[in-house]
Length: 257
Image (cartoon, rainbow, N blue to C red; front, top):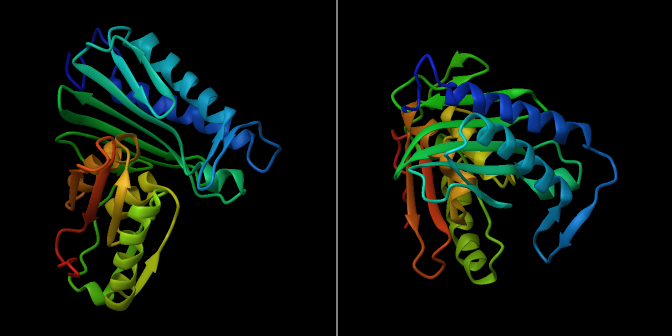
């Protein structure tokens, strides 16, 4: 099996797009309404809807590819020894969603061994869908996209993510201060996957965050790279399940040290 599949097999990208749209319809139908909260934490919220969204996506993916594995924010499923692994964030930006801020998305990526081979990010409130296959053209609602062509950080809009971990947040705050001084504008958007999608289509020039999970960035990394940008993911030694991210258009110097 390949990412593009054969005539006798389901097309992975088509299945992923359909799953993202179905989950988006579910999530959109609950926007602005009372929600069942599974957990309320100092800097995060877990909703029953997160689980429902991932279950819907899992069912769609495993019905099409029963030998594959699922690795998601809300747990794992399928054949965990498979070379094919779907990486799923059922609601990236849950806190935004809970507070009725219409900036969140579904992120789905497919990894073969260690290589991400497709990515889908869907914003159900704006009905914007980004999709890409490795070696293919990245699309936003069916139209090709590319990163911005800006070359100066002083002209750039940079999104800087803030970690939930207090010790990492201190470092992130120092980084934010440096970018505030150097960039045209800085933003804290609340959805890593959408930040990457925005870099891929040129709305943002860069996205920096000190600690995210793989499901936050797997699809977006492929999008950014396919659109002509760079996305560096560095595992954190102090938090083995977390990744530091620097994604940008590839044409400007984003170092601020």
